[in-house]
Length: 180
Image: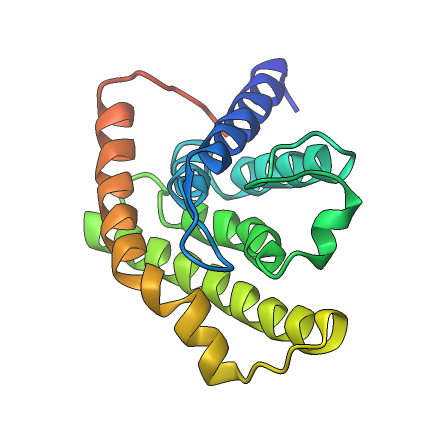
């Protein structure tokens, strides 16, 4: 891996961490800017480096740096919303697939929507697991979806579309030239 790739991976991991600090608490799963930052990371860096950047973000948080939405450290595993953080890794990889050179806008948007869906699946299932097994508060899948996905779905689809367009503008203007 080239030095510039390492620098970009670290820079975008930091951007995801900053996005986590911009949050509005609306129940057990806060509204944050993590998702747009994860998507931007993947759309700029591509699938491999985008996923690596999210892994770096995850590891930095797990060693205790408070980069997650409201916390850091190994205790984050018991947070009902930690599944979303885990879902960022495959989501970044999937969104990054949608930015291969020459792909039309609609294809990038479809891959971005798939990435958001994967994050929602990881987040909702992990929420059910933590609430039922670790916390002992029974929650069904439908109830979990109503808490963790429904309030965010429209916002994330809109933000995902805008992030794709923003990343394309950045690339078209040559602001971030990263050869994979």
